[in-house]
Image (cartoon, rainbow, N blue to C red; front, side, top):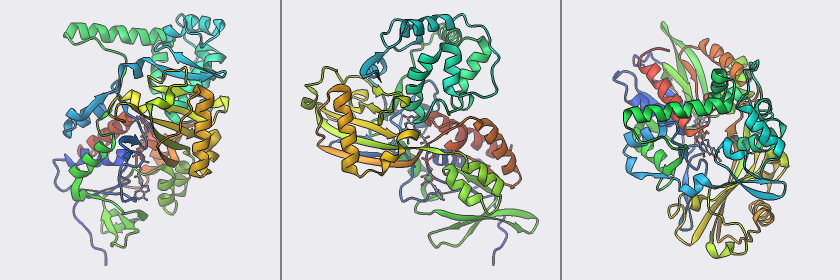
Length: 476
Ligand SMILES: Cc1cc2nc3c(=O)[nH]c(=O)nc-3n(C[C@H](O)[C@H](O)[C@H](O)COP(=O)(O)OP(=O)(O)OC[C@H]3O[C@@H](n4cnc5c(N)ncnc54)[C@H](O)[C@@H]3O)c2cc1C
């Protein structure tokens, strides 16, 4: 017999970074009747984030780090006592990024202006960059693909090479399919302000420098990547510790029901671990979109169908540890961030990150290298079906052909993410609005997680923080 429970208990489904952050911020809630419980299907929380030993190195299974252009994650780390553990990427990682194009590796300039002098682009593409600076306002479409946005500003060549590779690197996706306003809202905003992307970026930079000078602060540098000494898994472990018994791992939410208890409707949450169902006033779904769809299908099929429409790109992370002597035959000094390939070039590897050069002495001991190849994406998802030996062979053959790197790794670890990164396809912002409208029809329900408003670590932390504030201040 189920009885009415007076307290305003909050249930979060999914302890990836998004759910963990939300639970953490809610724990600071001054209202003692609003208690939080977070359920995680797996025995390990963190979702795609984990840092695992690879021999005497550390391999990140998901994200490699976060940028300081948004302070959300740095602030969170400091707040939970990880300030001393923060590490900044090497200056060579910021300076040296490569693009594999037309059968050759090219060093990428760090700015659009630098592009104008780089051999990566043809003369006419360089002229387009200069022309963009004087671009007048265009009629901005409600939605457009990232490729089309770049086409409108810089022409075909840049859209097909740089923009394509950039999207591969961040979203593991297809620039022709992904929505610019959903994936890069800041660029849309800059365009709305100035018409030209280059003029807008320059104006923002000048404004930042002016403010820094007025306040006597150090002048702003270009965005830099950060991580933690022992990897981002440390962030997850610390959040886990802080949550204590509020977090239950190995507790997959199997089904949910919205039931009437007296005058109130409450959520009844059923777990697959045999524990009795529990009632909550508020339910926040922070698991991947397809999992949310499964839970909501019996209750609100239209909402479930919208969520099902948010697909994710499949990515395999191939971590390799090897000694420096193995790189001697290559003419390319693997010192920097790594390289990217435009997805449309059809290469099997989306990119390779030289983790031991990004965070020297931290991801692998001196004299050894730890690299991660990212394989898959929308066009090569089938490669995730290869067994480890064959997948590794694809990677090693590609490294030989790209940089004449003839590597025989001492240790290899392959992690396959069938649903690695949600893809914000054209129409995503309309979909998000529809999802939020449908969710309002179910009292106490919130749709969260990286499938909604941003996949970057900083955005996950920020969005979870905003939702917590709204819940605490009872603004939902
Ligand atoms: C390979 C890779 C590289 C990346 N690189 C970067 C990077 O360099 N920088 C950056 O900023 N971002 C990067 N990202 C993106 C970022 O890591 C993710 O967007 C973010 O971690 C997603 O967090 P999440 O909590 O929304 O989802 P997830 O990590 O997917 O977590 C969802 C959780 O829900 C749980 N769950 C599912 N179903 C249920 C259920 N029924 N009941 C209970 N629990 C359930 C899952 O087990 C999982 O733990 C990368 C991602 C990947 C995959």
